[in-house]
Length: 332
Image (cartoon, rainbow, N blue to C red; front, side, top):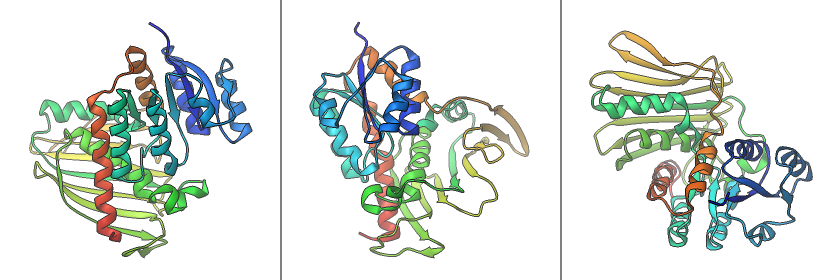
């Protein structure tokens, strides 16, 4: 079996981190790098000295590679992914795959038409805490899930200007952080249909209304799953939260509850607690190096075959939910 040769489009911190994780699997070869920043490209070359720095994405598409890893601003994701898929390349993309459910659906349709592997960096699914939480849910240990509380507060917010441009980012903290929470709860519960989506969004402490062009820095949404479970989702940038980050995915069922949460404000240290009545048992504790696992898993899948996998259709679910939250809060 031939080792898949990959091109990496965008080699900032995340792009380089995912490159290193894929390379360490031994399943792929880093063949090409494209980045408008010479400094980023050189830093990427230090990770993969065997790679060639190419001048443009078009040159990468023409290089006869097996796949591309995309880590560029959100506005570019969908069209860049579709262009690669039409050339017969597999795609792994940073979240969000598109700025709307429509964009995401177009990419998935292109992947299916090309029969090529498609992946998105929903990294929290691959944490030990999320894996153990999924086991609790699917084994029936929690009973029937009737409520979920989801939170992601980032006390800093993004450091790149494009995140604050609605045309480029598609939205603010809900698009940046809420998409992880939406995907996580839907994945944990088997991707049920969603109803009764209501949301409110704020910028600088002021409510955003119909037609607002600012991106939100605080958002809260409530929705119901077809199972009857009630879900609350809250996320923010630069909230006065008293710590660097507050991350939580708590599920409550008729037999017990469980909470995936960060420890001491860390963005990376996660634990899982299992609740029975007033008793609490810690099932997973940090530390754990999980950031590149989604990328590594995709690389290993690609080495086994480039064809489309039906689970890629599930990528639409979180994007469709966010669309509904934005419509509720902002109209349109």
